[in-house]
Image 1 (tube, rainbow, N blue to C red):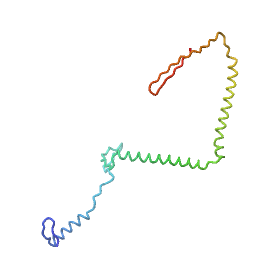
Image 2: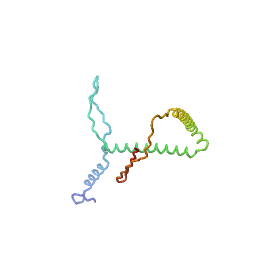
Image 3: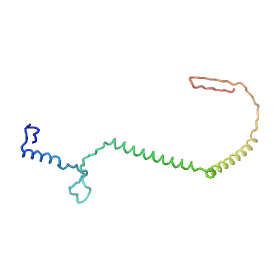
Length: 164
């Protein structure tokens, strides 16, 4: 015999059956589903644009949290790309041979040699031109007096040399 929770007395067979039916009905009641899409059944106009229809915003995640999630996915993808690039570079460095180093530096050595040759030629041209151009006329005075001024403030110092 069952005891009714509110009455405190034993239930009759019909009351127990009704209570069992109520409990089973409540337990196996279909779950009410919330629609995840919106369908507008209003008829469309014969021509022109359709009028706007209000659609409720039912987002579960706040906008700031979605922004942080997207940013973290972007940062993760970027770091993964950097890691893959570093792995490829290190794999290439691990298989370095003398021949590959020589072939890789050959263009730079050729450019350096060409720059040295051009610089040497320019230096030779300038030295021949300037030797004949220095013709001094007039008196020459040599002063050996040097005026030194030094100031120190904290960790900075300044020295000024004036030749007169």
